[in-house]
Each structure stands twice: as structure tokens, then as C-alpha cells.
Length: 283
Ligand SMILES: NC(=O)c1ccc[n+]([C@@H]2O[C@H](COP(=O)([O-])OP(=O)(O)OC[C@H]3O[C@@H](n4cnc5c(N)ncnc54)[C@H](O)[C@@H]3O)[C@@H](O)[C@H]2O)c1
Image (cartoon, rainbow, N blue to C red; front, top):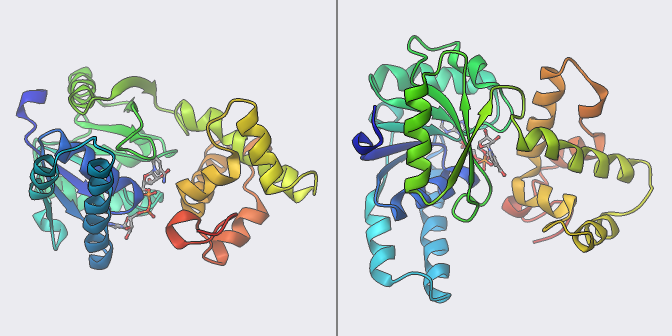
């Protein structure tokens, strides 16, 4: 499929990433269908998009008309069978079994479409293995917040065709993003390198070497935009923990990717960060 043929984008998952991706697509003129297994999450997702667009108006970066147009392009699908689009972007929980089961249904309803996953860490070839048609399946990895971050990793699975990769690269450009093609391996490029930013900071915390605010402050002072703990709070503790766990598993328990007990406890307590109001910091 050529990029000109992409008119409607389907987004599966209306959480942190699904909302941002839906907003970015709608602002670039695409019709967007969004589905979440939790109907409340979909409603909340639309309310968050509305609030985010309003913030842009308040900052003088967007007109009222552009906001109204973008919102009018986004429709919630009440059930998965209605998610029919030229391009589907999946942004649900970071679990291979859930993603595979979701794509099994999506594939049935979207013959000929390009199907993509926003996974942070799971090799796309593993997700594609559950599909009949794998040539039009790829990774399309946006960064958080998806409305702001310019980088998109496009990941080519073993059976993804070059035509699919070209179309996705052109699609990212239409969103005003810069696409970088990455090879299919756990964590791709950015998350593999960035993993140690979190893992090492958590290790220092476990060893009582320093504290959350000091580490964050020093990392910011040394040139990073955000410290590791505030970044984990932004990403979502549950998501960050799942990504580390997935990479630890994928690299055959290489200790350098070992998930942290401190982080596990935060997840157990429901302290997910910004989205739950409490993480390493209070919001
Ligand atoms: N948070 C980040 O910073 C970030 C950045 C890049 C990529 N990602 C990846 O994006 C994906 C989503 O992450 P997120 O942070 O948006 O998570 P999130 O927890 O904020 O949202 C996930 C949403 O998926 C929904 N969901 C779960 N199972 C579903 C299903 N079977 N069908 C439809 N909806 C379902 C949940 O109800 C929830 O609303 C993950 O794969 C994650 O690794 C996250």
C-alpha cells in the first residue's frame, strides 16, 4: 500500500500512547478510529486529547478551528470489529499474548491494510508470528509524548516488505516526524540503550547509594532532559517494568537487564506515576 492510500488510521489502546498517536494523526488530517477494551479508558482518552489540544490553543500554537477539526476526525469504536482502517497502530499493554490475540482479530477485519505495533521492546517478528499475512506488519514505535517527540522507529520484521517500510516512513513524515528504520531486536535501538538509564538508577536506589531527587537532579544537571525517576513516572511504572521484564526475558536473563524489586513494589502498589497520581513523586 502507498502512503496516499492511507486515509483512516485505527488506534488500538487509548492509554498514554494511544491518545498521543490518535491526536498526532488527527492533527495531520487523518480520520482516526480508536478502540480500547475498557470503554471508560476510551472516553477518558478523548477527554485527555481535548485537554491537550486546549493547552496548545492556550499557548497560541493552535486555532480553535484546528482543534474542532481534529476532534471531529476521532471516533471511538465500541467494539473491536468496528476497528477497520487503512493503517492500524496497536498501543495496548506490553504483553506478547495480548498483542497476538488482538492482532488475530484485527487481521480478520482488515485485509490488505498495514498493521503496526507500538511495542517498546517485543521483537515485531514474535508478534507477527501469530498472523497469516506478515508482509504488511511492522513496528511503528512512537515516543512519549507522541504529540511532541519527533522520532519514530520503524521496525522491519523478518517478513516485512521494503514497500511497507517505505510507506510507514512516508506516513511518519506526514505526521511531521522523523522515521529511523531499526532492526528487529529486543528494545530496538533507543530502549535498548536507554534501559540502563533506569536499571542502573534503580540499582543505586536499592543499594542506598543515593536518593531519587538527587539522582534526578544530577542527571538533569549533566545534560539529560529528565532524570530517570521522573521519566519512569512519565512513562508509567507498569509499562516501564513490563518493558524491562520483556527485555530481560528476551536476552535470556542477562543480569544487566534484571528488573528491580523497588520498581516491582511500586507496580504492586498501583503507584504507576503521573497517570495514577503517585509514583516516585506525587502528582
Ligand atoms: N508509555 C510510554 O512511554 C511508551 C512509549 C513508547 C511505547 N510504549 C508502548 O506503547 C504500548 C502502550 O503503552 P501505554 O503507555 O499507552 O500504556 P497504558 O497503560 O497507558 O495504556 C494501555 C491501554 O491499552 C488498553 N488495553 C489493554 N488490553 C487491550 C486490548 N486487548 N484491546 C484494546 N485495548 C487494550 C488498556 O485498557 C489501556 O487503556 C505498550 O506496548 C508500550 O510498551 C509506551
